[in-house]
Length: 85
Image 1 (cartoon, rainbow, N blue to C red):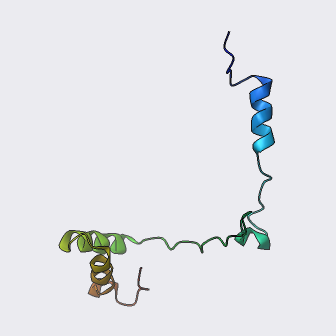
Image 2: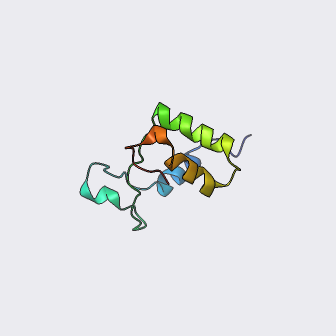
Image 3: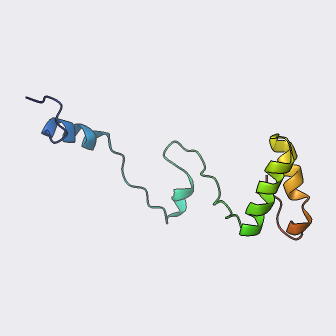
């Protein structure tokens, strides 16, 4: 007999008792999670051009993230783009 069956009522009740209420992501309160921490702003998507420049920066510098950021943000291919961190 399997005492640890996933379908046993005890296991289902345990899971149900530990679940948290659903969060309405469209509400104004959705910016703060249940712990009171502010959620980060939505991330910008990377364009194909940015991907290529980032790969180039990674290949043409040491693997130092500061140098990669400087190389990426100083690329003439990205003039007029917002800098990345």
